[in-house]
Length: 170
Image 1: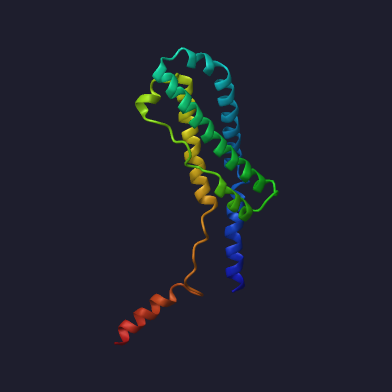
Image 2: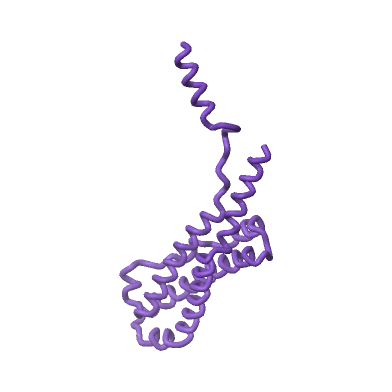
């Protein structure tokens, strides 16, 4: 029984260690850099590019820039929450409760034909944010996966051996 509690604890530690990994650090930096890059673009060159668009494309630009901003804010929230786990400011269990406020599926982009009418830099930011969102979703699933259930106690081969024994005794 002591071995079982140790192995269950190891599963939790493994999940918590994912936030301490180089992969998480890289993902965190990439996410924060993308937030900064997007803000700079939307406040700078993006404004000029938006003014040059026709009315329909301008409306799509406004909609997609809002979706992009929403998506990135949700991703940044998730990343910051898990950085807090990494730095020991909260436990993974606390982060799991708090992450229910974060919507990792929020603000998917509109139709591809409308996106194609947008400036290339905005299209690139949208694509990169969707890639980041996909990677964060996968990591979220891994980090917050429930530990596998243990249905057998002791040697897992015993039930099969007992069935074989019973089959040959008949």
